[in-house]
Length: 388
Image (cartoon, rainbow, N blue to C red):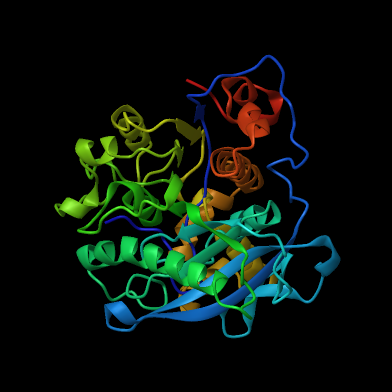
């Protein structure tokens, strides 16, 4: 089973990287105005709502949205707090709830999909970074396969994933067409991107290749799967289900740009998965392979932020089992110890490459080509990233 170890108090997965870029490199790195590993020029707003899919038995999804805020509407407080348990929440360093959405038209929508049995707030720093660079980012907890409701079988969960993302896109485009809505006349209805981690990374692939009986959504123009399974044998918990991976024909059917991200020390989803995908995505116009050297499966989520918060509150690790957070112990140890790949650098690199990828391939900003080149990956700024 593909698991994003996230329970009780939330954990999931983060990132570490080697870049194999299929783009041309120039002799000079031309840094864009908005460096992709720093907050962009927009403020970050956050809101949440519940969406009901009437076409699928009134399926209910809890949804969070991060969005750009124009300079004149920016606020520093009160900051967004992402709830973990009763009275405990991760306080954002960037987002503020329910401030006005940037007034720009045709803003680009991104959808994030969380890991198996996870939570849609597993990677909030990435969501906030993308919003600060001008993207509207929406993420739902996949009912039945989320931390709050993990009742579906593997195949049931897989079958819901692609339809959930298409429904989120429909929902946000509908809001953009409704006068009086806070997102009215804000979104581009033609080109979207999808990013996801682990099972969510497979979801991102499914949006372009089809998956678990669902057809591709041709509005999706770029995908960034993080720690995704392509070959069921290349994961620690293999399955016989046909939904546990993708066929060569499915991968060859992908015709949009792809960024494959993974950690070389991922013991859950082995990094060799991305090598297979790189070879078989023969019809994609661009495929980037990014392996963070030394990163594990849980370098792509807020495991460390959660564990550190508990410790700051006096809830030490010996108490975690008693509060239902026992499954946080191992991920915290391999992700957040002094011996582990630095989580701050993993987060920076994840942000840098995902922002650059979507800026280049959804916004057509060629200034970000320099960050997606082998030259940049060999620079001091990306010392943990190697290029093959």
